[in-house]
Image 1: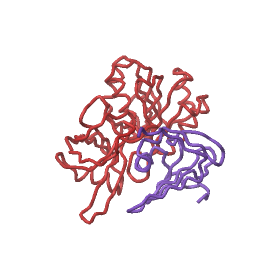
Image 2: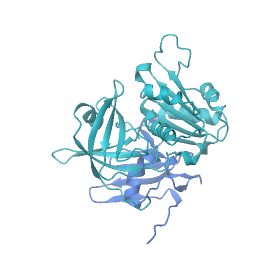
Image 3: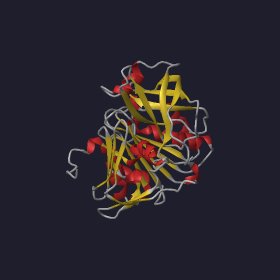
Image 4: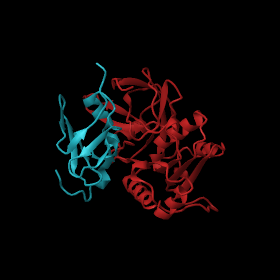
Length: 96
Length: 249
């Protein structure tokens, strides 16, 4: 999955494009919250990541080192979230 | 807002307005309208009789001060599955499945202050227009500049409204660049956005400027790189690139 990005830029979006699916997963707006890249340590808002959205999912990469940070795949019944590329992801606690 | 469930609702098409040869604005009445932040988008979902679904995101063009309805301005793309349907088939009174508003990153409202530099390529002006309409609606005089790149003058979306917003005398300046053909006697920019142009436009606003860039990927990258080269901190620059699929997000 870490193939070079040459030629892929035409298909590139920003993390904001994943706001809908992230809202589905976490139940709140996520793109203004910070995430740290496991590759280079860059911390920035989720919305600032590079997004690639070939159906059926999203791949979010670090804009500094281009490492894959999150992968999201949707099937008719499930969502797969692979967050191996992130050190952490911070979001607001919801009141019980 | 944080705890709001993001649910699909059935919007009714209240009006359709032709903006340019390739763009139309769809006014949607929403039974469960929620105040949006300028820059946010809605997801729109079409379902075929055989249950095949196509989903796209479209930026909100209207200001949040307008209650109960939203405007989505959509460019018709060649072979665009969803944009083609919206442009060629949809009529007022039709219903559409939408959910939103979505997104908390590429957003601005007056309370976040300025100065504001907005950079648009083509229909990338749509979310930025929501910001400018909001700015006007609340009577703000935050210094703002819009640099708007279009191929020809006929391709400018909201041309008349941008002119009147600028003439409002509240600190908004609209700067056009036309990359293919220019009006007779045009003395303004007639080239793609480049570092020199960005420097000229950004400099009077200063280092505290907040920047929002929306358009095709190449324009977004050129503008972001040019502004960083001009000395602006990357954290002050927010971008939204167009998808290849017809969505404006």
